[in-house]
Image (cartoon, rainbow, N blue to C red; front, top):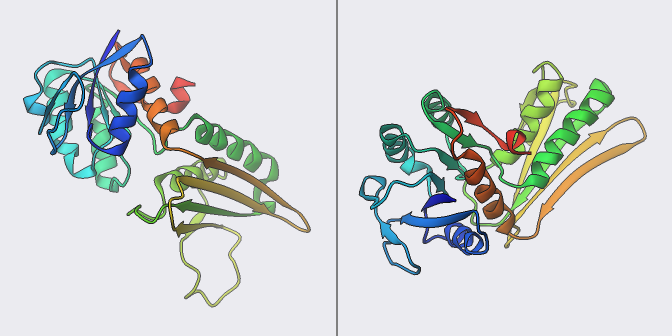
Length: 249
C-alpha cells in the first residue's frame, strides 16, 4: 500500500487524483496540502508541507511552481519521494529538481500521459529514419487558461527530436519578424490557446511532396491524474534518482 499526500489537493487535478486513488487497492490518500484548507474527504488538509500530520510514502504535486522550494525542503529533510506533475517551471527550477534527485527519488516529466510518452518515442524513431531531409514543426494547443507557452510537452518533444539530430537544431518560436527562408536547422514550435482544449500536440515532418504527421490529443485531464498515481506507486521504495515515464513504461 502506497500512502500518498496530494499537494494542490483542492484544485481540479488534485481532486481527480483523489477520485482515482479511491478506485484502487494499491494506494490511498493520507493527507493533502493546499492554501485552501477546506476538507472534502477523510484526510486532513494543511497549508504547507511542514504541517503534514503524517509522513507519506510519496507526495504528488499538482500545485504551482512557487511551492517548489518548500516541497523540496520537506522531502529532503524527511526522505520523502515526490512526483512533480506541475507545469511551468523555469530552467533554474528544473535544475533544482534534478539536483534534489541525488538525495531522494524524484519523478519528473513534462507530461504524465502514457500516450504522449509513446509519441516521444515515435518521434525519435521517425527522426532517425527521416534524418534531416524533412522540415520539422511542432504545434501545441491548450485551453485559454494555460499560462506558459510553448507547453513543456512541446519542448519535451523538441528535445527528444533534437537528441536524435545530435542537438544541432535551433528552436524557432516566432516567425513574424523573420524576413528570410526557413533554416534547415530549425524546429518550429507554435502555441495555440483557446476555449477548453485539454491538450493537443502535433509533429509535422514536411518533406519533398509528402508530409508525415504524428499527433496526440487528450480528451480529459484524467489521463494526467492516472499517470501521476502510477508514478507514485512506482516511486515508493525506489533509491534516490531522477525517474521519468520512460522508466515507468
